Image (cartoon, rainbow, N blue to C red):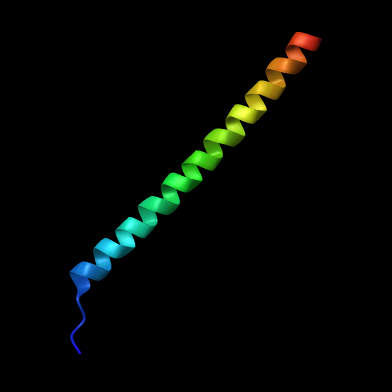
Length: 45
């Protein structure tokens, strides 16, 4: 059984980019949430 390294590499790259994209989206949402909370605190103060 021969190992298709090229295919394995691209599958891995796709998985990694998907994970990075998901992580980036979660970080973006967290920053947005923190920013809104700070803005609300400043408005209330």
